[in-house]
Length: 211
Image 1 (spheres, rainbow, N blue to C red):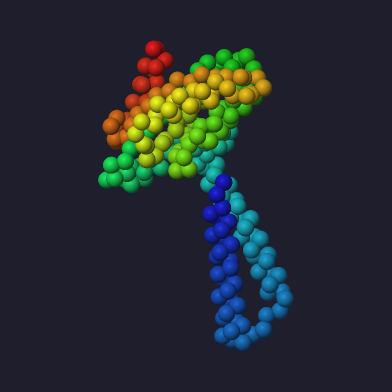
Image 2 (image 1 turned 120 degrees about the vertical axis):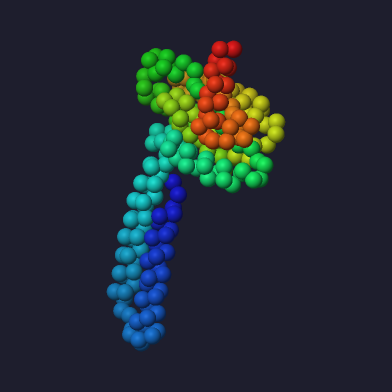
């Protein structure tokens, strides 16, 4: 969770009190009592609390509450912004669709609590292998999308291999390993909109399932 709301709110209060102090103390020559600084502290506390409420609301508007990955609505907006930046730079973006195999069987066998724990664990694994500027998205009940920005050549094969290797050794109490079907689409080779890229990745993933 970012601190933007809290930082902005506190800065506004600080700026206001600097102006207030300058006007009354320096310009008009009034002397401030201790109550001025007490009230300033109270205003800062209220600003911090109010800013935190904004940060929390923004966080849950963008993120999936179970996994802390981004939600579908957010990635659609973000991708359009990224396209506008990458369009004239000749850079590529990978859209990697990751579907956990037999997730329903895991839910039925071990219960939904274990299923939720598995989803959180997998999301953390994907995010730990993502670059800071990448986006990891909870796409469906058992699906994730990893948007890899500024894709470098010949890196996807290693990425898929490392991801599958990691999923095969989860180190969880109930579930030791899980397999995943993975589909990949590349911007701009496979499409120039997120909708087309996710469709291509979905097709690629189901071809992998049949293989």
